[in-house]
Amino acid sequence: MPEIALLCGLTGSGKSTWAAERAKRGAMVFSSDQWMIRLYGHHMPRELFDTRVANCMELIFDQANRLAALGVDAVIEGPTWRRAERQRASQRLAASGAELTLYWFDVPIDELRRRLVIRNAALPPNTFEVTAAMLTEFAGWFEPPTADEGLRIVRVE
Image (cartoon, rainbow, N blue to C red; front, side, top):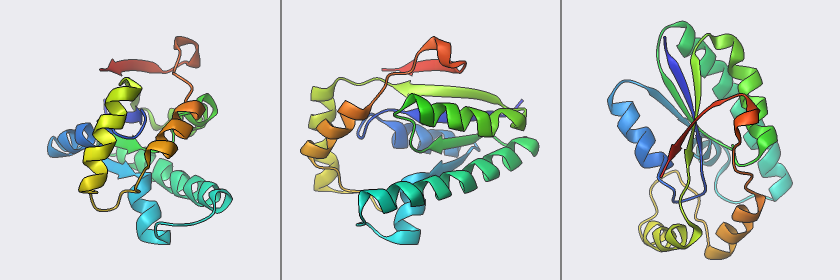
C-alpha cells in the first residue's frame, strides 16, 4: 500500500532533509515553498500568501491522490502547523487509499534557532528566508499534533 507522508514541524526541523531521503527511495516529494517561489516569487503580503498557498496545496493534494492510485508514495511538505490544516489535508487525502502518516519533527526552539543561522547563511534554492523573529512568530502559531486528530503520528526527534 502506498504511503502519503505529511511533514509537520517548524523551519529547520529537518523536514526537507528527510523528504530528500524518501525521494531517493522513489517517493514523489511536494514542497509548497518550492511551488510558491516558482509561481509567485519570494515576497508578498500575508493574506495573498495564504490564498496562494491554499491553491497550491489543493493541486498538491490532487497529485498525491493520483500518485497513491498508481501505487507511488508521496511526501507533502506544506502547511501543517495548525490542527485545521492537518484536518484539511486528512480530508482531502482520505479517499486516496494510501496509508496517511503525519511525521512530526519535534525539535527544541533553541536548536531551531541555531539551525536557522546555518540555513540562512547558505539558503537552499526554492526556500524562503526565515528570520529569528519570524521563527518565534511561527512557533506561536504551531499547534502540536495530538492523537485525537485521527492521523497516524510518527514523532521524529
